[in-house]
Length: 532
Image 1 (cartoon, helix red, strand yellow):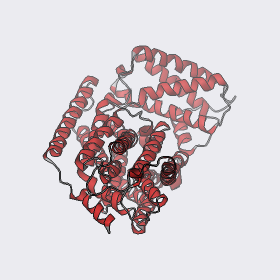
Image 2 (tube, helix red, strand yellow; image 1 turned 90 degrees about the vertical axis):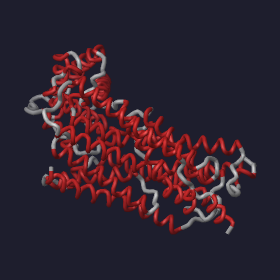
Image 3 (cartoon, one colour; image 1 turned 90 degrees about the horizontal axis):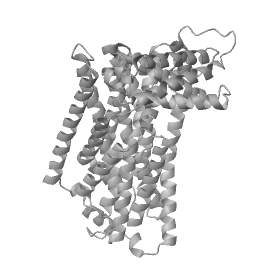
Image 4 (cartoon, one colour; image 1 turned 30 degrees about the vertical axis):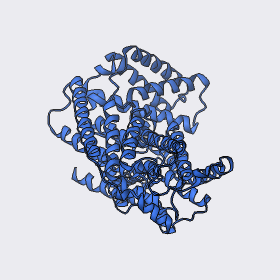
C-alpha cells in the first residue's frame, strides 16, 4: 500500500507544464522552422533553378512535414523512456528532466555519423531508391512514414512503449513486399533479407540484453556497493542523496544522447531521400566536396576500373546496359559473369562524368540525378560483392574497391546541418508534448514496487551502452525495448515482482508491431501508387 501511495505522489501525471516550458517549446519551434527554411532556400538558390513549377516544392513541403512528424511522434515514445527513471526517483523535476533530455537528444543527433540513416535506406527496394523523385518514390516515402506514425500514435494512446525503430523497419519491409507483388514478382524478392536479418537480430536481441544485463548489473551493485540508500525507494517527493542523484542524471543524459545519435538518424535518412527526389540539383551530390578531393576521386576511379578489368571473364557477354545488370544483381543477389564487366563499365562512366565537370557542384541539373544513381548502384554492388565474397579479389583490388566505395559514400551519403537540427528539434518537442503516458507506464506499471535508485541507474546505464554500441556499428536498436526490458530485469533481480498484465501488453505490442506495420505500409503504398 505504501509503495502505491509513494508512486502516486511522484506520478508525472500530476505535473503541470510551466510557462517556461511552453516558452521554450515555442522558441525552439520557431527557431527550428526559420533555420531550416533559410538553409533550404540558401541551398536551392545556390544550386540554381531546379523546377519550373511549384509542384515539386509543394511535395517537398508535405513530405518534410510528414518526416518531421514521425520524429515528433518518436519523441512521444523513445525519448520518454530516457526520463522515466530520473522522474520516478525524484532526481529531477519532470519538466526540467524533459527539457534536459531534449537538449542532449539534440546534441546526439548533431553528432551522429549517419551510418544508421543510410543503413535503413539500404533496406528499401533499389528501383524505388533510383526513382525516388517519381510518383512511385513519393508513394514509398508517404506510405512508410504515415504507417509508422499511425502505429506509434495508436500505441502511445494506449500508453504502450512500442519501438519506433521496430515500426520503421516493418514499414520499409511492407513497401518492399508490396512493390514486388505489384510488379508480378515473389513478395520475398522485394526485401534485402540479409540486411533485414541483421537489423532484425539487433531488434530481437536488444530487449534480451536490456533485461539480462540490467539484472546482472543490479546484482553486481548489491555485491560491491553496500550503501543502503542506493537500494531504497524514494520517500515522498524527497530527492536522493547528491551522489545518487548525480549518477541517475548522468545515465539519463547518456541515454538521451545515445538515443538522439541512433533514432534520430532514421528520419534523417528519409529526409535525404525526399530532398534527392524533389531538389536533386541541391542534394543529390555533395556539392561541398573540395576540388582536390574530386581530383583524388577521379584517380581512384581509374585505378578501380583497371583492377576490375583483371576479373572480367574471357568471352563473357559485354553488359550492354550496366545499370540494368547491376540493378538486377542488387535486387536478386545472384552473381552472373556480366556483373564485373558492368561494374567496371559503370565505374569508368562515373569517373568520366566527374572529370568532365571538374567538381560535383558543376554537374548539370539534367544529369545530376543520373550521376547519383550510378554512384549508388556501384557502391551497393561493391558492398554485395564484398559481403558475399563471390569473387576472391586480390589484396590490391580489394583495397581499391574499398577506397572507391568510400569516395562514393562521401559524394552521396551526407546530411546537411539543417536536417540534423530540424530532426533534433522535432524529437525534443515530441518529448515535451507526449512524454507522460509512456513515463507513467515505465515508472509505475512494469514492477509491483517503486523504482529504487539502483534499479533506475542499472536500467539506464545498460540502455546507454547498448544504444551507443549499436550506433558505432550502424545498427538501429530500440530505446524503448532496451530501457523498459531493463526496468523489468531490475524488478526481477530485486524480487520486486512484475505486473504481468503490463508485461503481456508490452510483449503483444512488440510481437504485433512488425506485421501491423508491414500490412499498413504495404496497403498505403498500393493506395498511393494508384493516386499519384
